[in-house]
Length: 111
Image 1 (cartoon, rainbow, N blue to C red):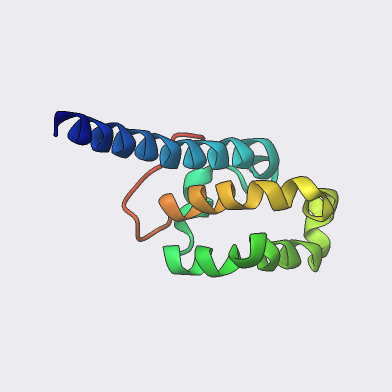
Image 2: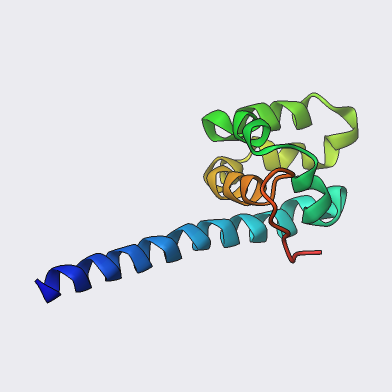
């Protein structure tokens, strides 16, 4: 029985670490790809609620990419949003944006 509880405890600990890792990866993606145009992550992430960020990031961030690709102001980011790397990073970026959304009560430390 002790082995069972130990296994459950280790599994829960490992899964919580993996969830934080995805948020951390999203923070890293934001710093590398978004900070130049949008500034610190706190202001941008807090500008929308969790539900709105989730909708923008549906289908590997397709809606967010379309917003950037249709804006002449975002021309510098077009190569990034057309790149396959964005599709891979989108889930981590979503985790970061929803974790620090305006209604989450959390504040990122990436400024």
